Structure formats: structure tokens, C-alpha cells
Length: 321
Image: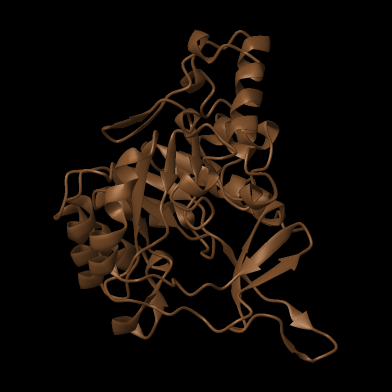
């Protein structure tokens, strides 16, 4: 194993400096404590907690998770106990986590985001806030916040007014121009962007002749979405200059390096954790080995290295074939 102290693999998320670029993603790494028997959490950069809402949510009907080729569909439905219970019973234990703890906020109105962000960010255990804006806005006929630049900006601006802690806007891949959404989030005050959330999808049971998820549709994650996520990181890195947490189907160090070269400053690992709890550590060790082999002393030196002189919008028009 390569001596990590010989290399600078830190990643900056606003004012938060992560000693390692690997991040356990929301809903896929618990609070970190669940993985402590298998992983040295001090070798992670951060853990993003499960999204919390203003009021308790029971979540979607079952089944909520379906295995698909090279991926997984989930439709959990933001099940959580609500912010008040969460603050009273859960948050204090995160103080013992040996890596940064990033809270995740979800909502169904701009006011929801502002309220929960204000309450959660006030806690010293929370180092930064992720805004999970892939939620329907009930005031705008259910339109997803992350699919509209104005709604994205309104959420980020409202959250920004409540805290000086780093804000990370988690973007959706289910848009035609993710760069426009990214610029709206950054202009409104986002310190970093998480790129991307899950891709909408579904599966059907051909024998029962009905959708396999209780919610009918869900979010696809895993290796199947990696090329989609990689392109999104590439495009966002060309649109804004804030740090990007690249995420979506990353399973190996090679996968992670693609995202770094496309412009990500940090790497989010989600679905891979279900198959291998040590995935973030294995990926980190692989990144360090790559750096040692190529005499790269600082990870930031390769961030975006493949994102210069590449196709512009005219060149890639019609690339669907």
C-alpha cells in the first residue's frame, strides 16, 4: 500500500478541507458508524447523511429496491423521522465520526429547505450541508427543483441566508442542460456541486404484468449510469469553477480517476458500498497507486486534466447517432 502522507489528496469544499477525496453518499453509508466494523472511517473524506425533511415521512410503498442489470433502482421516498426528532435523537452521535459529517436537506417548498437547513446547520456536528433538490415542488405543480434553474436558485439562495457553512447543491441528470442549472446554483450561493443524483427509471415484472417498484418509478444508480454521470461532471466543470463531487456508478479507482480528470475535485461512492463496504478505501488506495506510478504529488494537479480542448456544443451535436 502506498504511503498516503507522501501525497496531497485533499479536496476543498468551500471552507471545508477534506483530507481524502472519497465521500460516502447519502442513503448509502448510513452515518458511517454502520461501516466502522469494516472500514477505517478516518481514511474517508466525509460521509453524507440520509436526507431529512421538515416533517416525518413514512416513505414509499414496497418494494422500494429492485436489482437491474449493472445497477439498482430505488424508490425509498425520503423516509425519515423529521428534523425535530432527528436533532433530538440522532445528530449528537455524529460528533464521534472520525471524518467530516455532511447533513442532507430535502423539502417540498423553498421554505422547507430554509427551515431545515437553518436547524441542521446550526449543529456543530455538521460540517456542511447538501441540498437534495431532486424533490417535487408542491407549489409549482410538482416540478422538480433541480430541473428548473429559477427554482434551483431560489432554494440555494434561501438556504444560503441561513448559514455560512459550505452548501453543496446536488444536481439531477434528468435535464437537457445541466450547465445552466449549475450556474444558477453557484450564482445563488452554492459552494460546491454534487454531480449527479440518480437517473429516473423503472422495471416491470413480466409475469405479474406490473411495475416492480411500489412507487412505479425510481432512481437508477450503479455502473449503468456512470457514462451519464461522467458527461455531466465534464459539462458542469466547463460551466462553473466551484468544486464538484463526482458521483454516479463509481466502483473502482479507474472509475474515480475518470471523474477527477473530467473535473471533479472529490469522489462520491454510493451503490458500490452495498456490494463492498470497503469500496471507498480500495478506491483511495488505487488513486494513490496511480499518483505514485505517475509521480503526481497533489491530486488537484490532475483535476480537469482531460477537460481542455475537447468537443464544444457544435461538435457534439447529434452524437446520439
